[in-house]
Image (tube, rainbow over all chains, first blue to last red; front, side, top):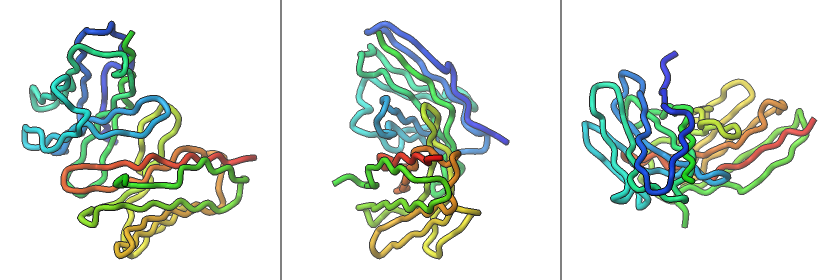
Amino acid sequence: EPEVTQTPSHQVTQMGQEVILRCVPISNHLYFYWYRQILGQKVEFLVSFYNNEISEKSEIFDDQFSVERPDGSNFTLKIRSTKLEDSAMYFCASRKDSQGSAFFGQGTRLTVV
Amino acid sequence: RKEVEQDPGPFNVPEGATVAFNCTYSNSASQSFFWYRQDCRKEPKLLMSVYSSGNEDGRFTAQLNRASQYISLLIRDSKLSDSATYLCVVNRDDKIIFGKGTRLHILP
């Protein structure tokens, strides 16, 4: 069964450093998402991406964040100048169309120290 | 008001009991609806889509009432393996919005 894959599974970084979280969505999917979940809290929407551009973003997704689809398969989230409060689980998701269900990757646990 | 609201839980329920989850959404432009399940420190996984006609998958029944903007999930004959957080999810345009989730503990 096709699945969304994310790498790395766990990343530890020093405050102020930049990190890139990587995702390979399901191959025939057209809509891509990043979410984050701080431990014990809800799953929060960050950004949606369709047709090679951001279609919607939340207030969390400020200038510190950017997304890219550098080739036909990868979808990346870059976090610049990381802060302690960026520590969270980051989930990538994809779906085939705008009404269907989304499939999630296993997440990258980001720890900022 | 939050766009998707769920019972805060947790629910502690004996094995074999029936459990009901409720969810309301505030934006009438919401287009499609889902229940996801999330185990501790894992990704959300689709449990079922929700339709106005109601749909059933084994022990699970989901229902949507568009007029009252209400979504429900019923689990019959609950098993220990049903212990998880249940997430009400609403789709509007390109955005997929999660409720905070209701934690379920099935007690042996």
